[in-house]
Image 1 (tube, rainbow, N blue to C red):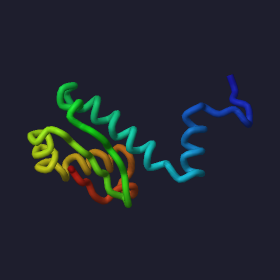
Image 2 (cartoon, helix red, strand yellow):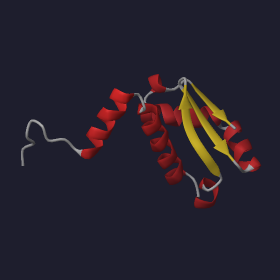
Image 3 (cartoon, helix red, strand yellow):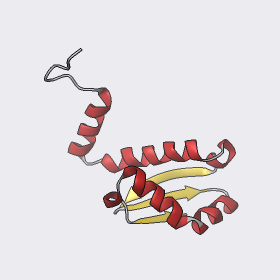
Image 4 (cartoon, helix red, strand yellow):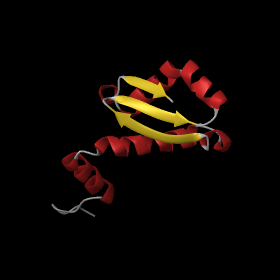
Length: 97
């Protein structure tokens, strides 16, 4: 089944609109949160309040002090994981709040 010239996948349309209207970083933040949901245990994932991207910096807000401390200790590990998965040029820092 050949794709017609103007047929697009819905995900391609969403990405295109995100690029046009400047909220592409929000889609990446959702992808990072999905990645963390798969990577972490369910009880740990529930402690993550939000994931945002501002000025090429990933900002993860965590409720649990123990999980927050673990993320801070492994900050470079998580940053490298995110850069490998989503592209090094998209982020240069990771903040845990």
